[in-house]
Image 1 (cartoon, rainbow, N blue to C red):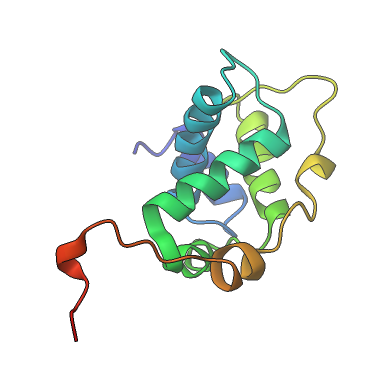
Image 2: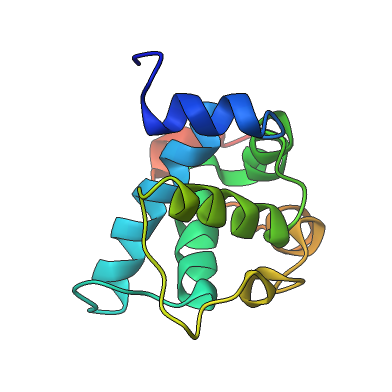
Length: 129
């Protein structure tokens, strides 16, 4: 990544979150667009739903730990990441979009730890003992 790239500028201005968090949000944005069949704009709540599903699929029971490693402790942190990217011109927003759209939408402990369900799709992996 070049010294003058938008993500480098963001990380220099706001070091709270790791680069991986920004990349994951962009991936989750594409995921949410497909899920909600939207060509361009998704709402903050739609994006957070995409983040939740993609995180559970990709990281499983480790999702909360991965997010914490990235500096993300609650849904508002994803809002901060989104609005940092809006400021740098990576993402755009409508006049209806607000940082408040990301505030207290779901609790990471509830979603990624307490309510996490292990799924075993491969019968060979399950021990017979």
